[in-house]
View 1 (cartoon, rainbow, N blue to C red):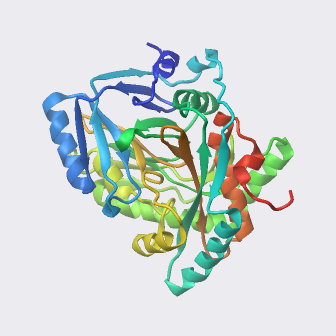
View 2 (cartoon, rainbow, N blue to C red; view 1 turned 30 degrees about the vertical axis):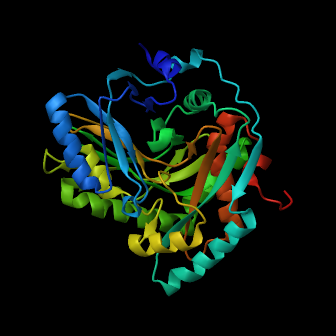
Length: 385
């Protein structure tokens, strides 16, 4: 089957992962491996795949230490094809009915207040950066149309990583992440951290101005430097060589501009799999902060929800140790008749609360477009515009 057929065949409960290089559709469960010790889990997955071959697919949580388990599945069947685009161009968009209700968690003014508190706490706690997220709870009169949303996400994103993965309790994690946590292909290791963001614009001149502003922004360049240094430091012990470009480049999604740095290396030990690398890397400062332990504590104090699998990682690993893992952002956790969308932003010393609120609203547009939600529903912000 070509990539478009794989996307058409996706049903809730399957695993779908599309990139600029390949499309993976995995179905059924031959084995399930879960646990909160992610390095030990990576060893167990390697042993299972060495015995039966194939791949394992799944999710890592934001914080396994909190008790949310990583979940890897060895599927019964796996279909792979090339990149989804241009194959999926022949598919039509699916209509997603209007939701019954959309509620911001926390309210926009409370998120802005949390950002102000975070800026103050950076100096008090000797933090360089912390990432604060907010959520939108979207309720439907009937079952969440997961397959329709996923198809629309694939159609909207020629680049990046569109994913849908089964979660414990029959829930689904779905999204379109712009960020590669790590990939391994033979001895070659690649990470592509993103930090620093500006909204896209439908006006070409404004869009170009936003990109240039981002590339010159001291705040965003600092945020990106913090992230790149942390990813390089985490990868270093696993690599015989590591190449870290001195300057970031502009990366685009349909909704956002980002600063990105493509880090490449050669693996030192061939027994280190893509899943071992993913477990060692996350959570990065892109979705937590630095130092990680202090940032995580502050997030727990300021965010009124458990992140669960948001800001973790989604991907696959095969019996050779190769694989790809995307950072689980621009995503939602879908239950039977409701889903929770997440969006966050990096807070540094000169962050502006209202600008940070606007950034999260812009990031909600990734899923919002796939669901047919307009800007007002995604903002939840009563300020005049």
